[in-house]
Length: 177
Length: 280
Image 1 (cartoon, chains in turn green, yellow):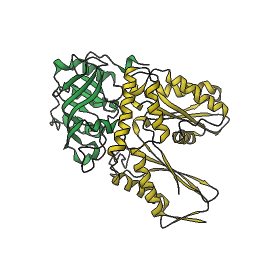
Image 2: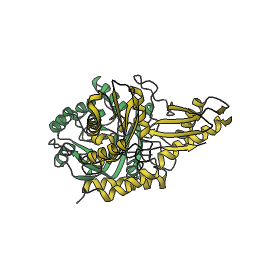
Image 3: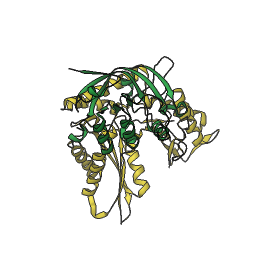
Image 4: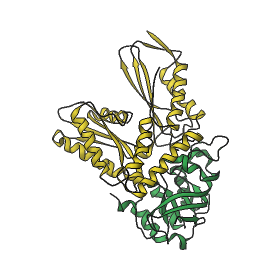
């Protein structure tokens, strides 16, 4: 049975997900990658509010290609999550409940996930055309000057992902190879 | 003497940037499609099916195969008897990139300074390698390179005593540490020999070779085959989620080297290993 996850993602639901499960995500999620993370991290350190509510949110590590006039968004696949590791524990401690990306995470991130009951999903890497079809609405809500790295609010339907690391710290990648 | 105008170069580079990002070369496309039948893990097969569907959607709906449309690597082979007319060759190539990335709705992924990190907003400059040859040939290869896989590439300055076994270990260690980050199934470009910079360039160039064509040197051909088998027994699989299809090919290029050295560079190409070549 395919499991549907809706946002906002609450801890009680996130905690029940198990590494290896295929899920489909529906609801509002936020894109942020390297430059946006750096900026959010610095804003939080100064005591300012981040550009979207972190609690119970899902961040998608993604910077799209430009949309053609008739398209919602261009190609929109996951980028390597590990580059965001430095900034992630702070967000998890603020209640970030889900992350979507590709590749492995640091021990510090996994510990923060366990502490807060959060999950990390892997989306099919390099399948940006396919994944763009699941994005029904997209708009830039912060850091417009960063171009593709701006924060986008995205409404997704049936977005396919695999639970790569669950809230207990079970790591699908570590079980392989 | 043969003359080629900068306008011809601009137009060709523009078209090639777009073509490379919307459709894979036939060897890559066939490689991914046929991998579906050879993958024995259920999750691995599911990923490969998603990649095939992604290629179909990209071409049909004009959406780039991957959102990382790359930093534009360019190989130019230019005959000594070719005259470039109407301006600078380098500027013409960059203008072609600029137009291709704008008109092709491709992502602009280049920052002007590696530490200040301000986006150039037109994906220039490209990374251009020139090869000057006798005659009046003019050939361009456009190979947009995504950095998920680029970041997982490595260079090793081995000792001659490390031998073939050391080369194998270097390649396997790089592939293992790349794992899911490099978007497998990958193409593994390997440069052996030359100097520090030469072997890195060989590894990059190796990624532009048809994945079904093996080295014409018998000992290198054997090494390519043995390494592919070893990589595919690591268990990494498509998307790094487990399986037997971790790499589609290992392409090795070699060059003479110094009596004291055995440089090895491993440049990982993701499953969107893009390259388009045209003779003008």
